[in-house]
Amino acid sequence: MSYYEQNRTAFLETLKEFLRIPSISTLPEHKPDIRRAAEFLVEQLRGAGLASAELIEGPGNPLVYAEWLGAPGKPTLLLYGHYDVQPADPLEEWKSPPFEPDIRDNNIYARGACDDKGQTLILVKAVEGLLKTRGDLPVNVKFLVEGEEEAGGEHITHYVKQKPPRLASDAAVVCDTEMFAPELPTICVGLRGIVYSELHVEGAGHDLHSGVYGGAAPNPIQAIAEILSRLKDRQGRIKIPGFTDRIRPPSDKEKAAWERLPFNEKKYRKEMGARKLVGEPGYTVFERLWARPTLEVHGIRGGFTGEGAKTVIPARAVAKISMRLVADQQPDEAIEQFKTAVAKACPKSVRAEVKILHVGAPSLTDPDNPFIRAAAQALTEKFGQQTVFTRSGGSIPIVGVFQQNLGIPSVLMGFGLPDDNLHAPNEKFHLPNFYRGIETAARFLEIVGA
Image (tube, rainbow, N blue to C red):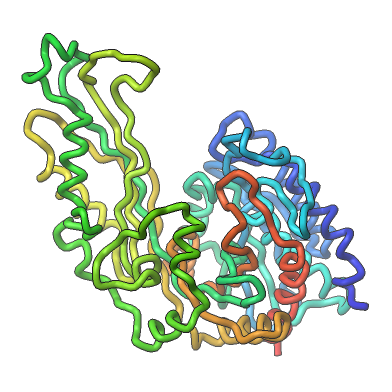
């Protein structure tokens, strides 16, 4: 029996302990929990055999860093994860408390189980097993784990942009993605970038009575609706001038591979609870999800939203808007295009201002990259099925940061499942994937070292 099989119970108990820490990065009251989670990870890395593990302090939550550089001449891998989690709201929808891990049907339920504490521990335990059994590693490794992934990632971005020599590596490894389907090993080779913004619109100097002023007073909520309708049409086409000019379309080979994926549109729609799918005409579902940009409205705030009636014309309103970017789109350029389009669409009766909250560049990696091939081999060996290559509609901004500042590709080798409820109540992680993920990550290091 291997070290990994012998220690599954210990690995599970470690995961439970990690998940009990409510390290919510978006809520200031959880700052002590953030530090506790970071210190917990430092202890785990030292226990795994990386005596160099430490906290890197800076403008934001601490980074966790550790390294093992005892394989001269071998590749160096930068192993990334994040220890912060999303808020657990709405609490009443959880079947078990979000920070008291509960095991049901071979799944562990807790906030952060899959995103990303469980998957970060996969990398830690893979390295631990090799060091405990071999006494060394087949490659050099550097861990860099952040505590702000769910809140913009400012500290790690600032740190990586400084290009400290200690981060020099040949490739990054990120376990923060999902498999396309159960038992189907998957590598994600493309991520959409993101521009998250707030649109602030002001009309009159203060709220007004709609009976006295209605028909003459500007209404910021109405103005937001007018602006949004000019940015995207009813068919889902983004109307911002120049916005789609740079897009690199997927190759025919990649599109053919997507068509072979086990996908049922009716089942997918049922999963969503949606009557009908939407999106740009002329593109498949996967193209719309993975290879086309989006513009989505996440919320509009303003006026009266309480019970009953209050006839008020609000003085100001705010809309939260994100744009997902795809390969070759430039965030800075997209921001300027967006601001210009908003200014042009804004009614002259109101003032509009765009505030950018956070930004991440898109990324795309060649599936023939040698580190991607090594990961595909390890996944195929451990799961017994040929590895498939997908993209993701989501964003992991640090991947673009690594690519732009360190000049390295990222291997997105994730072990989550589509129904793991990331960012939602009842988040889970399938325990067989947790255990096999550890063994797969260890095998990947061996293949790269060979």
